[in-house]
Length: 237
Image 1: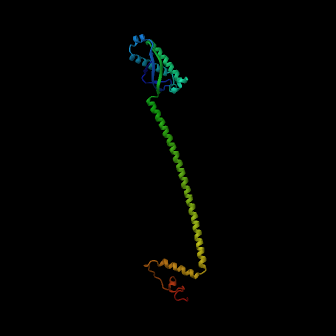
Image 2: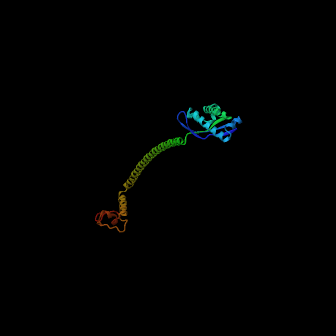
Image 3: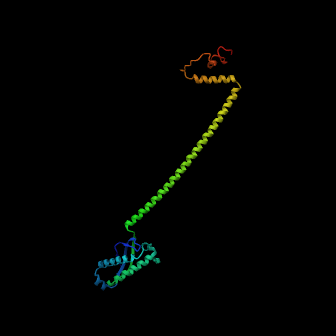
């Protein structure tokens, strides 16, 4: 049993689709005398068989759609269309080779692919589709992220505003309570309240040793410096 590899060829299917087919055949010599008379050498027999395979493939493939040639080879054992095509090709090649004392046992398609240019175009289209899909996913993600970020900023603003409002309310309530406590405390002794407020005023106004004040000694501001009772000079304490 001998093998022959047919050169890969670009053929046109019945639906005008281009396909590159790489085929091989298994053959044997059944009539040595005729084989010797017709061909003499194995190399010549190989070349002639390759020519038979090429021409037969061209004829048969031209009558079949591309999809029939691209079926998974594993389906051939189940009587698929591609298996039927290969049996037809084997019979046709064998008919041509009989005259030379040769029997072609089988012809098989090793590879059936789209031409390189078509494959590159398909790959490029697939790449473009995937890139567009990726851009759409990224855009959707960015939109969702911006929405989440806006919602978070809005919630943070509301939380901060509510916190400030509550703090102002609490501060106002505390200040009101403090004022009430001070008012209640100082209302019990108005003279002490006046003395305490004057001491606070002295601390604030005279805390700097370089401070210069031009006031009358009898001014009401200095009433507690002259008289612990707070009587203004020239008046009855």
